[in-house]
Length: 380
Image 1: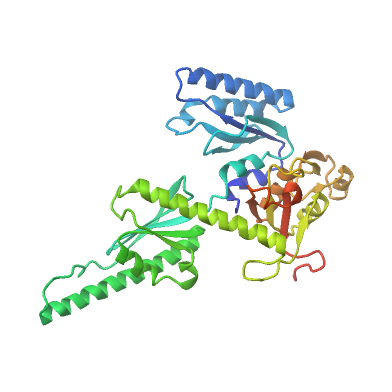
Image 2: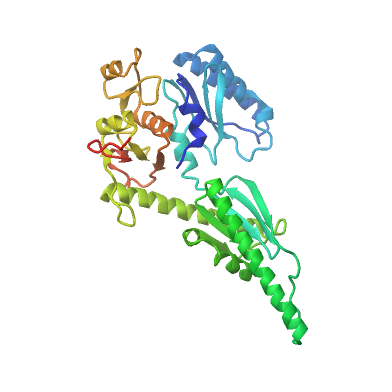
């Protein structure tokens, strides 16, 4: 899981107010309940030591009905500091439990657990003329452009005389050119949008013609849907089901690959990993040195809730408060290990994998695949 979503919170020092809540909006007394939740949240933050400006900003955000209008669900994760809400993320379902915290590090782990890995899928609705692109994680999506090919000639005839045979050959050539144009556009869009999978939607012959013209590495992550087409509303529900299945499959494969590499020290094709780290001291040291390439997190693991010490910068971590003095932090503060390590890993562009199965997770719930071992630092 790459974490551009968390960029607003990992790049700021804090301290942070974090709120996970379900905001009612369908019951008769929803407005009153929303007001009570907002007031109670603001009061609790003040009791925890939050400043008036930050607790007030969250209270106002929770109480504002216009921000919640038209939403299918009312569950949100909100992060605020220095008197303003920095990030407000709708959740796909109710949070495991309401949560209000105030601390030096934002309470990130429940958000990642709620959202899952969310791999992006490039959905291509195509026909003989061209294709429309959409990027989605199975829940929300956005348009990502289109491509249009030649439109003449495109229709075959039933006649068998020479002129018609010549015409049909031109039709075949047009189809082939359009299929190649679509395939080239898919490869370009895939590279730009950061998707991990492609789903082709359209008639069987058109899907196969495009699939066969994709670059070889892209074919291995390209799937086909037997439902829908390019026309608006064509079997939308069935296509959305297919998208969800593709995303779920890639999520499962990604978690399995990461946990296997952590366990065996090699990726699926046998390339050795530089090193791995487990246990709070080793993980803290790797985070300080920006060596974490992939962080594996089981939120239920015993190490996740252990206390570490942090400073204002994401790479200021220590097992003891005294370590922060050497890192230039005059006022170290205690934080949960999982949140501190996630903040640090996200700030350095590391991948983060939430492991839902305790049997697959590292012992203690936290582990890392390192960019390089401490014995072999990268060449400058």
